[in-house]
Image 1 (tube, one colour):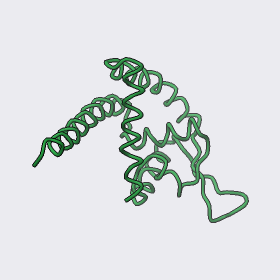
Image 2 (image 1 turned 180 degrees about the vertical axis):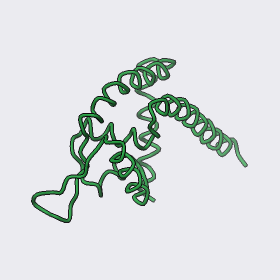
Image 3 (image 1 turned 60 degrees about the vertical axis):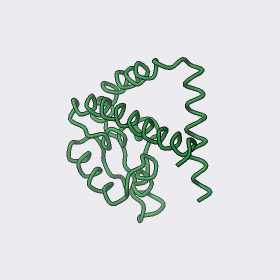
Length: 145
């Protein structure tokens, strides 16, 4: 195995470990509010982007669609969201954040954002921009396969 292969494997391992470390840290903070990371992602999406068709939420938060019904049910039971039938097409159902859900996100999101900023501040603004571009380059290259 050549040096280039070793370098590629090392990058993969370092990237995976960094992602896991950041994710675990952030998820522990989210769980203090009685939410799992997926529930938080759904609430955050609905808060910032408005009502969403149930069928499209999974793709927007990178979750397998089979789990989505379970997550929506849990959020509805906690009264953070409601299901709303589409007036134009009865086959389509939207998820809508409730006032209770909005209050929770407004309580949680600022500290969530601050924590992400704190974590990423080990990199300069220029380094963050470089990292963004490099990760995009890797991700977009896979669309060719």
